[in-house]
Length: 258
Image (cartoon, rainbow, N blue to C red; front, side, top):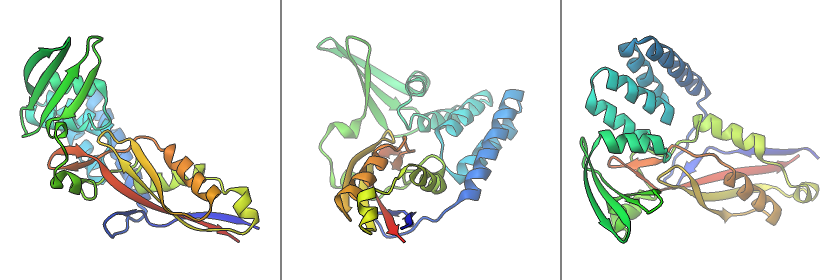
């Protein structure tokens, strides 16, 4: 028997379908690469435009970081800081340290051998709390995260203004699943197939967390779906009101034996 694994359109908890957009991914990459070339040549206005065109297709940390550098050299301090904040999406320490140094108003206190920095964003309402332990290790928290979740924060788990994005967008996600999922031989030999629904959360740093089966097919197929989802690289996280939030994501995968 021939085994097929297909991927439905990807669904969030809200109804809706995201369709394949391979041409957009290729176009965004071309814009980005051209922007890097112009940035290296010192043609900052054109580089800024190309990075913007790339980001209009899909969000990528490198594109935000390079546009931040471009805008810094153009003297656009607010644009630099806003893009640098977006470049911290996956918890990059270098981007975070640069943002903390250049783009925040800081109030530092000391307690129990630790240092706390309350960092108010210069060009936004967000405020971060950074705890530095005795070994110099930093942990970052948005101030709203230091209190119990409010109904508004809970809503952010299901809907955000900017939804999380897999590297390479939907086409990259489908390619990743196709390259890594293996049809379990036990279910394949018995002709077992169907739709397995996996739910997981994309954290504020873009990590895949809390992976569970919403509706399974068989034990081995369910385990395979969980295994591959657990292999996923970091996503670009979702955003709500200018800050990164944790967002729930549902993914149906169809296993078919023919």
